[in-house]
Length: 198
Image (tube, rainbow, N blue to C red; front, side, top):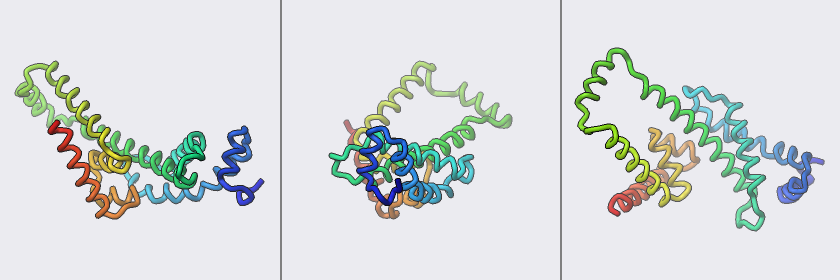
């Protein structure tokens, strides 16, 4: 069996029937695409510990997800669906790694700042920890409400924006131009205003 002898749908049918060989063929067929997406994302991994092989592995997981969940009755080509699943999985791991890297930096306290931190805690205007917990719950609730109003693209841009990525970086990650990212951010802002005004 060779992948050029079968189209994606024939391979998916064989996989559904339990063919391990068909599964290996479709993986081999999509390896160049996964490699290309991983290469494109690699510059964003300079300081978060991820290597190209990590991104390729995540891309393979994304492809397996596409194989398992794709339904032919959808009005989407398998290639389009698989590409989206691969990109999302790789983007997700990059965002997660960057978030964890920044979390460690943000949560670490130098000895020089320890006294200032203690003063901040003492002078904190929040009367008690219970009220702070309530504030956090309100913030999380608001964030969830905002996310529910966003399209897939808007949610990806929103997450990248929250994680501190610049317009150009977001455009590069998502394969969009900066104008498209700017327009998406304007739509997100309008949706956020509506949620807050409710």
